[in-house]
Length: 297
Length: 228
Ligand SMILES: Nc1ncnc2c1ncn2[C@@H]1O[C@H](COP(=O)(O)OP(=O)(O)O)[C@@H](O)[C@H]1O
Ligand SMILES: [Mg+2]
Image (cartoon, rainbow over all chains, first blue to last red; front, side, top):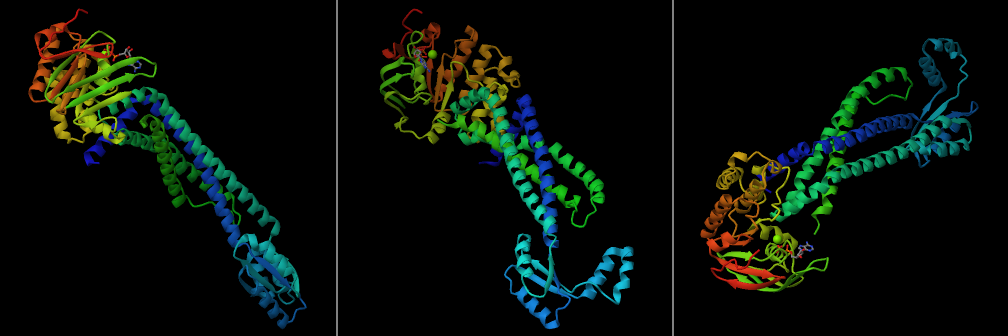
């Protein structure tokens, strides 16, 4: 295709948006609505993902060693832990280090604990990390069976629930987004089809005066792409503005250790780019789908 | 060269529009196709640029059987033939200028040449001043002239016109005929279905007369030959 022809298709696609103005409004509206919903879901999902990642990387198993265990016993336990398949790494933390960490964690409240420095009531600990958060439970119960283990803790309740919740959230979110996109494509191609009964005749005429199918299709491609791009303007503005607002207002309030929202920059920009791409994609898809039928025969 | 051999056309509704047509039209000829309404003139013409395909028999354009032609080749056939449709078939949302330019855009002519050719040809059919109008803003005669302009703008080898003077007043009709003669004088084949006794009898050319889907008369420098 010559560059001039490409320009012509681009010009023609743009003009078609104006020539079929009410249809353009309807199609752009469909894209906008879809993308706003998609954006909301993506924001939620990607943040949940992030939270889950934080939990997963934070989560570890604390193996409390029997107070009566001798140094040899402790070494042997360490060896046993090290031989487990799913263990990524582990380290030993003596009861003194544990106390120090505890005092530090608690800040001013921790000063009371300093009294125990002479007579430390805490256990020595092995801190064990697994490759996957899903392995925590299994590894923990194996270690529980080893000798010289007083207790094993990996925040089982919370981690399990969060992981499961997140898994569900992911499935539901992906299903929802896929459904939304299909609906949008359907809406757009139907909107275009409404005018296409008129356009069917036009396409017939174009063919009669010697236009190839690709020549006829190109302006539709451009038209669909522009519909998608225009339709993504409002959603992008909402993401950039809305997420900024959310981030500022929520992040301080949700001041838990592992619940932290993705930072506005670059997240809002990445999401915007994604919306632009999705918008263009559904616009093109819907538009090209709508002419396909009339280009046969 | 256009050759038809034993061509039949039966439409889906069972109407037989062509009933064994055999003829040859050489390059550079000027041919009138006359006959009463429903005689099959339009069907005859539609075979030549493959708007319709024969139910039986063969249509050859420059020795290529259009029945064997691949879908991909059809656009090229149509670009080599300028057609003025009975119902004009203008693109309703495009301006006069854009409608005519379309025939050059499909062959990827360069934009400067498109502009010049389109304005020249619009001048020729007397519609330069209405270049920016859309078809709905034009009279039937003006739309017909736009259709003519689009058909001849890329200097096709063959110009086919289905009752091109049907909607025109006598003066404009003669003007249009002058254009066809000019086009024909440069070696282009002109095939024209018509109901205009005046024109056929005054500008004497080959006349193919049709009735009930058959060619009933074929005369060089013929007469219109029947009363409407
Ligand atoms: N697309 C079509 N479908 C069905 N019948 C048609 C079609 N086109 C033409 N006919 C019929 O074929 C016959 C010949 O029509 P046509 O070729 O248009 O004749 P003319 O142009 O001489 O008036 C008529 O009876 C007409 O009704
Ligand atoms: Mg007719």
